[in-house]
Amino acid sequence: MNEIKNCPVCNGTEFKPFLSAVDYTVSNDTFNIVTCDGCGFHFTNPIPPIEKIGDYYKAESYVSHSSTNKGIINKLYQRVRKYTLKQKVKLVKRVGNGKDTLDIGAGTGHFLNACQNAGFNALGLEPDADARKFAEENFKANIKSLDELHGLPDASRDVITMWHVLEHVYDLRKDLDKITSVLKPDGRLIVAVPNMNSFDAKNYKEFWAAYDLPIHLYHFTPDDIKRLFAQYDMELEEMLPMKFDSYYVSMLSEKYKGGNIVKAFWNGWRSNLKAKEGSYSSQIYILKKKGN
Ligand SMILES: [Zn+2]
Image (tube, rainbow, N blue to C red; front, side, top):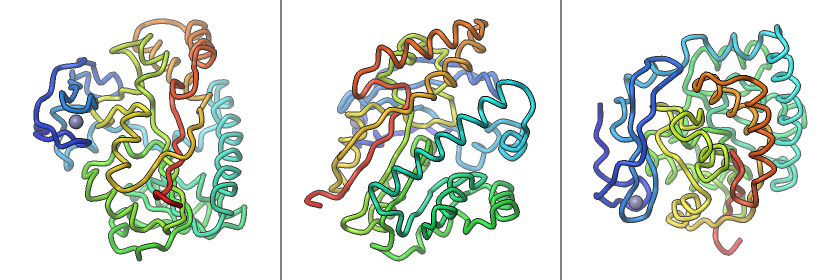
């Protein structure tokens, strides 16, 4: 395990224990989240070394998960995904006219495919070779290894998207330096992450599935996002809810807690009902360079 010595947001060195939670998906080991004394940011500490983190991702591959179409939950999942893909494409079109788009952590390429179908010039980067292969074979997607990120030309992309990716990034500073440089000066960065200020995070506490230890390294609030990106001269332009995430996260959280699906839907619904701006289960942040 690697001990994090400096806060990923403010570089501070003093932390307090915040919460311990079990990895219910793979290892059943317990991991810890700490709070930074300096800025209040929450992050997993210690973390598995980067060469071991792959062991903590679910055994069944993303590929099988994304292509099966059996069972009511899976059917529902497919329908929700179709709808949310449409919404995401609409958003990219609105903030960037659908021009040069870069999707970081493109996975099996469903979003990339939707972008390509909408006529965008879309490139995806993805660390997992199997996921890339799926995207290439099924969608003829323009998808490359994540290692290519640091070779991309600066100021070359109108829109960069990171859908539930930022919480997984190991070298946050190095990668954000590059990502914010690849963005055109008047471009938009779209970041979606779970929100630990949400009703369902507070309701489920250590069972909240979106803590997802140890593969979620960071546990953001809207204020953390503002503080983090201010260091790259970026500001928050707009915040949007991801209303389906509360149902999905509540379902998983109830499973870990030994609860049932009725409770999951009830809590997912309550989470959205109680949410005000900035307190949805997962949120989309639209960031732009200052003065643009
Ligand atoms: Zn800090």
